[in-house]
Length: 352
Image 1 (cartoon, one colour):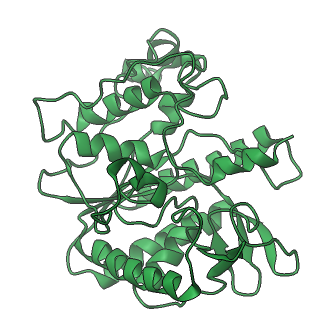
Image 2 (cartoon, rainbow, N blue to C red; image 1 turned 180 degrees about the vertical axis):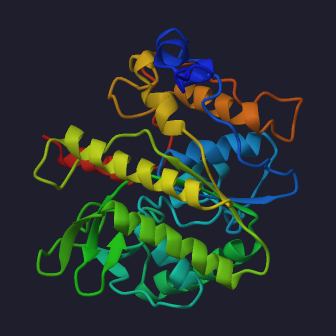
């Protein structure tokens, strides 16, 4: 006769002691790093809107966050985010799905060429892979193509030089060019272009598809690079703005986040070079009672982001001990936490 296998489990393994009787502001042991982030690592950031917060905090902690496509000298600092500069490590804007990431990697490595790249609106031209990066669009298709060639060259540089990729998974739902399988960060017609059901179709990726896409990304980079690469995955706690499924948006959002969380966990289990950071769990924790969400119940407040990053920096102390990058800015009743650039949020315009 032996004792229960739970007898020697630590406090953080039990719901009562780890969640119900613990402050949501201090979820101890919720994250234990797999490996340290070294001070000299070049860090690339990408992913959904929430990933923008992680990039900003890591810069404040004096980590070497890459910016291979900085803003031009004539563009004021305050306007840079509107044009896609300084948000991520390159000007690719939000990458919501694993398929988007795979598509970008293949294109940057010269393995594929863009299909259905140019969308038009009111005589202006938009890059369908990142339609929000040029407010008002480009003057000509030729100008757009020049910018794309420039960007892909710098993305390839990033892929070759980075030591750590931090990628935040956001969505499983996407719209694709049916004939080619090309996917977009937003549906045609939302920012630019026109939706035609004979050309575009809706896609909601399964666990197997997301897993295969991320595995292919990791294998491609391993084969292409001369040096090892670490990857830190997280899942955005921001729910879907809208769903194209015939389901309640809450049901669709739960499906999407469940698939992404399961894939991230599976990859961490299988691969020593992959770690998972639980930003999703910290924000959606039931003990928080929604306090980390703004009144729209989607946007994560500055205090919520700071709580997430405190858990991160508890394991990765940062390179600048003289500063506390996790101190949140004051939150007011008017503050909805939406200080990020997000194409998906534009779907609110179509809300009922």
